[in-house]
Amino acid sequence: MLSTNQAARLLKQGEVVAIPTETVYGLAADATNQLAIQEIFSLKKRPTDNPLIIHIGSINQLDEFSKPLIEIELRIIKKFWPGPLTLVLPRKRNVPDAITAGLKTVAVRMPNHIKCLNLLQKTGPIVAPSANLSGTPSPSKVEHVLNDFGENFPILDGGDCTIGLESTVLTCRPNYPSATAQQSSFASRTFQSDMLIYRPGAISAEELSEFGSVEYYTPSQSKTDTSKTSTGSPSPGLKYRHYAPKAAVEWLSNVEQLKTLRYPVVVFLLDNTHPYTEFFADKAINDGHSLLCCEGSWERFGQLLYDTFRMADTKNYTRIFIQDIRRHNAKSSLKDALINRIEKAINGH
Ligand code: AMP
Ligand code: MG
Image (cartoon, rainbow, N blue to C red; front, side, top):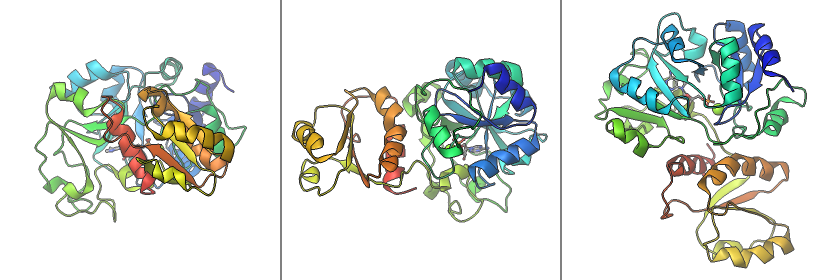
């Protein structure tokens, strides 16, 4: 395990280091070092058209990368940074193409994690995608990073991630051309809202709606949807397989789903309100099922989601049932992000 000073030194020498944030662990490199950035892509086996988020430790580092901010961006930054919100901004020319995958925009965030902020004070801006092999669930604990990259991988230990889900990715310029005309038909679609969410996260649409109207991006919103087939997506990460374990994931909405199981499964519950909880508790102990309940805490549910996915795969469970939270009457700012990640896991992408 590294100290903050050691991690900073390695980063400045061009090494790739795993770092903690409040969302998930990141695989970090100096944002000005092309070779180190390439090393991230090769270590993760990440497609080169999937751009990286730049992490900064102070607001004045923003104009190294972005053209001047507009009013709504300034207000959002004031409210949510440091925090789990990534802003997609018009890029300056000097930003390496390796970071933006050639897009005309750049994604930037200031993480809300004390060790990470201390590190950023020592290093300056770093790029950091999630510290997992592409295709595996994002890492919310040190052990997840070490499972993917080996026991000796250099890591700054910041404890378990308090959110455990990737940041909200937002643009306040929904009609700004993100790619060249040849790459994308996106620019031809006119979005009506003030803000467009590419990826839901812990900062919810409702919280953002204080600043104007908000819309979720879906690939079918493009007039001609090129996002699955080429570099046409305005947020290319969306088209790749993410968040899914090897085990099959299903919503659990009916006790009948559990009655006829012939082999051990994982059951992941938000709370105890379901009629099946009691029924299943005995069965879990008797039949080797793994039953996890978050006692009604959405935060805990978020923190443990990817850990549950990884545990299932490590212990060779082939099915994971997750309490159906889609119609849960409790309000939580994490709800949309959780539904998004679970649905992607259910659909295997
Ligand atoms: P990860 O760091 O693995 O959580 O992935 C980064 C996410 O940010 C991906 O979903 C990317 O599509 C998104 N992203 C990064 N840069 C941009 C950009 N310039 N425009 C839109 N989305 C971006
Ligand atoms: Mg990722």
